[in-house]
Figure (cartoon, rainbow, N blue to C red):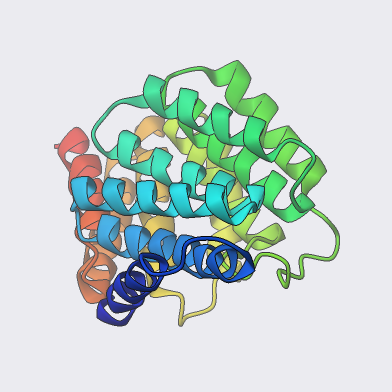
Length: 247
């Protein structure tokens, strides 16, 4: 996290001394990408305010760079800060604005990512119909070739989308979420500790909705153990919230 923070600071200092032209736009590209990454890292520590500030830096730099993909991605990521402070309707407005910015000017991979992010916001807001529509749109938009050369800040493929689908449907309390989550868990590499923790948390939530308290607690405990390994405060808070609902 520290190297990324230093890169953001360096890019800001350089831009303070470059007033116009291609050099400034090139610096803005680096700054937007670095600030968005640093914001996500900071959000993972639970510091929503600082993450919000960094995402604003990423958005401003993305706008100045002339790259709608960077601006839309920063807006889509910033939406998670609103979800973390329980403002789902504001999160919906922000991710919808990000999709408008993206329109048809970004890669299909980013379009799919934005649809999936929107589905998560809709689920948090309790809008099941819009959530399902967004998930379907994400599946349609996801290209067969998921090469992310054009968007190196983004990784999304069928496995990621299946995991995301399960996560979102679990938030809606749908029983079909469990099938997607179990498939994703089977396909998750053992080195993906954070993703595995998230899946166990989602499975716990889904089992809890089905009334399987012992199974839900078992998966929640696994999620908590893995979340502690990664040091993710954000993930630990989510696991504890799921366990609290089953107490």
